[in-house]
Every structure is written in C-alpha cells, then in structure tokens.
Amino acid sequence: MTNFMSVNEQLMKDLESKNLENKIEAIQYIKEEKYILFVPKLLKMLSTEENINILNDLALCLGKFKINEAVPILMGYIKNAEFQNIRGSFIYALLDLDCEEYFLDFVKMICDGNFEVYDHSFLVFESIIDDAKYDQKIEALKILQNQKEIEMLKSKSEYPKFDRLNYINDALEILKTSL
Image (tube, rainbow, N blue to C red; front, side, top):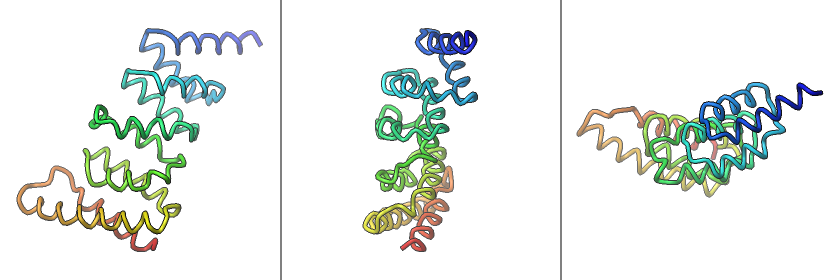
C-alpha cells in the first residue's frame, strides 16, 4: 500500500510542478498506466494550463480515457483563433468522444485549416455522421458543396498544397449515403 500511495503522491507532485518535463512525464505515465483516478485533476489542468505541449498531452490522455467532460473544453480551444495552427491534437483527441453536437464544426474544419486539421476533422466526421441530425446533414451538404466549388476554382489557378478536394468529395459521398 505504501508504494501505491507514494506513486500517487509523486504523480500529483509532478502534475503540480512548474517543471514542464515532470508534468509531461506524469501525464504520459498516467495515460500509459490508465490511472483514471487522476481524471478530475487532468480536467482541471486542461481548463487552466497555458503550455501547448502539456495541453496536447492532456487532450490525448483524456481522449484515450474517453472522458466526455473534456469535449467542451477542447472545442473551446479548437474554436479559439490563438490555436488556429496547433489544434490538430485537440481534434484527434475527440475521435472517440461524444461530440455529435459539434458536427457542423467538424464539417467546416474539413474545409479550412492545415492538413492535420482537415484530416483529423474528417476522421471525427466519419465517427459521428450516424448520430448527426437530418437538418445538420443538409446544412453540411451545402457547406461542402460550396467549398468544393471554391477548391475546384483554386486548383485551376494554383497548385494545391494539400488535396483537400479529395476530403471534401469523400465527405460529400458519406453524407449522401447517410441521408
């Protein structure tokens, strides 16, 4: 029992440390060893932490544990312009969580952002499409069709950096078969 308590105490100490390496190692240990008793602490940290590396690890840990309470916090970061170019891990962490209410947000992210953002958004889109409401799917069709036209025009005038058009076409096909 003493070792169990000392491991927990050390993990808590490391999570509260100012030392970023200690925090990251503690989060990774908690994730690997499935120490779910730390979930309340991790959720609190997710809401208050400022370091992006720690936020990424927290997001991935809570996603692995399938902690749905993390969804609104992560969506707050994803929608925050400050995280525009570093939100891929947050989106990926949502893959196995209940985020159907954000269905249209994922559709929009397929249409914007860097490769990691639209790739991970597409994966989440695929995982929640069956739970999307009919009117959300109709709205998603409109968004994707409009973006498809824009991407087709762009591809004629410039070499596309990533092939977003394939993702949009795949999303359209999935949507059409789900209606």
